Amino acid sequence: MPTLRVVDSITELSPVDAGCIAVSGSHGGLSSARYALAARPLLSIFNDAGVGKDSAGVAALDFLQASGLAACTVSHKSARIGEALSTMCDGVISYANPLALMLGVQVSEGCQRVLDKLQTH
Figure 1: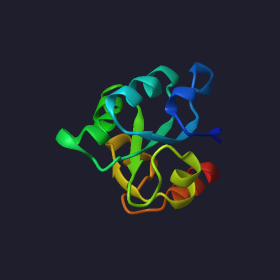
Figure 2: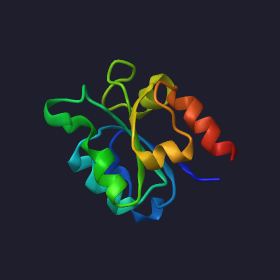
Figure 3: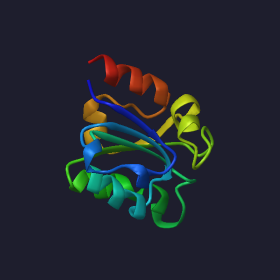
Figure 4: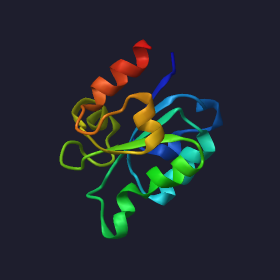
């Protein structure tokens, strides 16, 4: 069963967290993706931050997919940006890359439900 790491900022992860499920309050932009790439979690969960110009708030998903890592976001309307507990308890999945979908993540599903499924398999 993967370890659960709940961090307000994805920058709190390190290589010792490889294979964990990372629930963060960070936006899903490229700068956050680089920290996730360095730590290599099984799944990174971010906030979509309203998606933004040129989909900058979800750019991490494609970047991490290209690196073989699963990632998804929760809607900024469901969880507070920068607060991982809000991501985990209140977040509703808004976007997911194909690797996250393969893990069983579903858009419109509550983050806590995703975590429950992943931690029982």
